[in-house]
Length: 211
Ligand SMILES: C[S@@+](CC[C@H](N)C(=O)[O-])C[C@H]1O[C@@H](n2cnc3c(N)ncnc32)[C@H](O)[C@@H]1O
Image 1 (cartoon, rainbow, N blue to C red):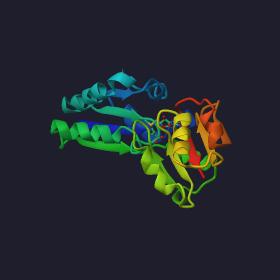
Image 2: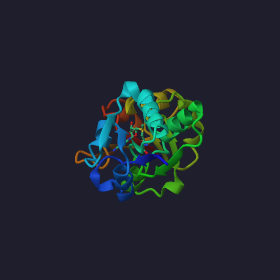
Image 3: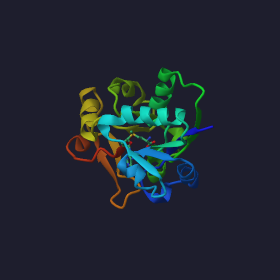
Image 4: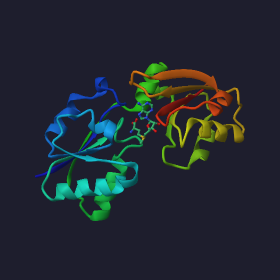
């Protein structure tokens, strides 16, 4: 029976790609993922590139190909279960009525995990949140004063997130650590006040820790 694999690739560097992810890519006729994901797997056979505008269409294609008898691996940056492709793929399977499809999820090292390691926070002592692609910013406000650090994927940008927090009564002097492009050679881990984050430019590839 054909199988759908959803594999986490880790934060981006080859050092964090697991042998388990390589194994399922090798077992697949089709590999689907963003350019930075598929570039890590030269062993892929047929590659289908995911672009921001056609994610839904390409994920549906992958699921349909499994129904058509092929093994397919969908790559997710970090871990598929945290702001990754597991959730949209499960929704597609349900909407198409393909519940019997054989699915295997291969975990990856999340950008949040690597962030926690870099700043040396045991992540069972932190609150984990994601605002990636969401507008649910209000949800962070009640937890910011509970004495635990909050590790979060920002919304559109770190500056937007900082402005939102300051507009909602969080002190401009609040300590924040921004981890940018984790695991890449140009990785940056910087400690700043919230007001400085609002005035700084980072790429979209950031995790924030709010103390
Ligand atoms: C679609 S979410 C995917 C999260 C992923 N599933 C995970 O577990 O890390 C993409 C967001 O994850 C964060 N991210 C992914 N890779 C990163 C990296 N190497 N360094 C910093 N942040 C990263 C960024 O906030 C980026 O906008």
